[in-house]
Image (cartoon, rainbow, N blue to C red; front, top):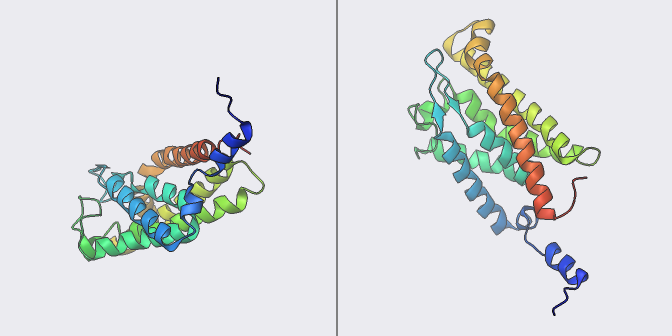
Length: 206
C-alpha cells in the first residue's frame, strides 16, 4: 500500500505553475499577452447588432475585464494596447460590424476600444489593492465595476462627440441599453476570477 506524504502533496501543489509565476519573466509576459489578445479577439467576434444604436453588443468588454484581473495592471494594459495596435494595422481583430483598421478605431465605437487598456489596468490594479482587505470576489467585483464604468463613460462621451449628440441621446445610445448586460459581465468576471484563483491555489478563499 502506497502512503502519500502530505508534505510531498503540499510541495507538488505549491510548485504548480501560476499566472503570477509566468508573468515574472519577459518571455512569460509575451506569451500571456499573445494568448490574452487572442481571447479578446475571439470575444470581439461574438456580437449582437442592435438596430437602434451604432454600438453592437459584444463580449470583448468581458474579456478585457478578465485579462486585467488575470494579468494585472501592467501586463493587462500592454496586452490591450497590443490588441489595438493589431487592429490599427488592419488585422481582423475588432468587431466585424465595423470597417476595421483605423476607421474603426476612430469611428463611433472608438471610445470603447481606446478605453480597453485603461479598463484592464483599473481591473487589475484595484483588485490587487483591495485583496489585502477584502475577499477575492469582492475585490474583483469592485474593480470590475469601476473599470466597466470607465469604459462605458469614455465610449459614450466619444460617441456623443463624434456624432454631435446631446448628453441624453449619447447616454441612451451608448450606455443605457448595455447597463443590464454590463452588470452581468461584471459579476461573471469577478466570479470566474475568484473561482480560478481558488482552484489554482488549492486553498479556501481569503
